[in-house]
Image (cartoon, rainbow, N blue to C red; front, top):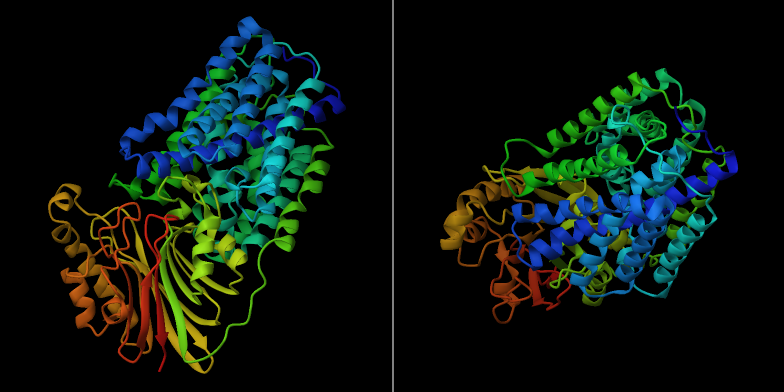
Length: 634
């Protein structure tokens, strides 16, 4: 029989405990995924397949904590897990060494994973309401930083906030009453596997500021405030509709619809996703049974399995960017949603929980913290300064490598300083994410636009709505054109982003693009030009067709081609002028920033534009150097 439920005040305390544990765990998971991708792979050179054990191991290690509860008691194991979690999180915050940061985040993730079944023993509300409270608190804190995770923020203020989160977590555990080792049965608990697919959908779409902003057609801060408010509604829905089977069934339909139209038009996306966050809360509750008077073994394996599913579905979503696996990211996203729906249906068919998933006071706390994204927007950023209009303009092309520097550390502020110090008025950006799971779920376009005071910005998500090319401009943008470039049997989608910019009485077309970096790795190692020319030739044909001979025009980006290659000759033959060959000095190498040997980033102009000066900024903020060019417009 299920154990007796706690009174409402105790349940509120447990929801808050679960929420704060979840916030620390979520911050650590996001940091770990970014570290695996950009530190382990790009800096340390670990192969894509070889990265899988690094992603899986921390979640497997988490199994040890519930095992220890047999000897330490549940209370003792909880204290060990919480202290390891908060200690690792603090060390991660104060460290500046990317290797040490990687391992501290891995330890924190292991502790968080081990705490999940112990939190279920504390009470169903600790897991159900705790996760929802954690999502609400987590999104509010990220909104305060315009989506920038605390783990990526330097300075005293961020450290103080992290210390406050950690100390509050310890205090909540200290104030909680004594617990018994209660868990779910092997028969009733397997729907807990749905935790992984649920977190995948939450962080890929529903809690994602950049994805919501891009598809819904609203600003980043507006998107984050909407998410924060919907998290309050989710807790209210849990309080009112938790036991309504019809509501849970409708919630499943809404979640599937949200995944299906996640890259659709703004009207459909807005109509569905306004209900998707509350729907996810109901589905999550349906999958969590009441703890029973038994051990924690079943809950441990099911919840750990759920977190492993989170990793697996995430890997399946991002691996097609590097490997041709015969399916698309959209198909992987739908597969994750279908898996969640099946587990949700199973939970719905067996809904037997008698204890509430949260307290009636939970939504009120979430409502209080929902103002944090608004504060972040009002207090942060630079005011947009009016540009000086004359016949000259400074432009920049910059592959920012998702704001990970040559050492593998995330530093969006250094990227901003490079752009700011350059004085560029129009910037074409490549490899800029708006909320990828493997880049800290950070909306870097909003961060840079707000930090630098650029009033005008456009984005083209080429692989999905959260990664691609962007253009920042101090001048108004009147027309925007987005065109996909042919893949030519390569895994990653590339794109052409064109923006017609009004500079006084003049209009100039500015194009930001990024061509494929490798086709056949074995051939590329021998003859990179021969490897890439068949792909680049097709991609350049589409670029030239989209351009259509418009003058004046500026074409800039990462072309992944050297100046003497055939593909560059084709651009020159079409009438484009390489500004570096006109006004640059020296080799102009732009990649790799750690050991620059090649010029592969370019600013091309049409013949009616005069090139005054061209230079390369040697910065370690990205794996590419930016190119800055002064132009005189006709």
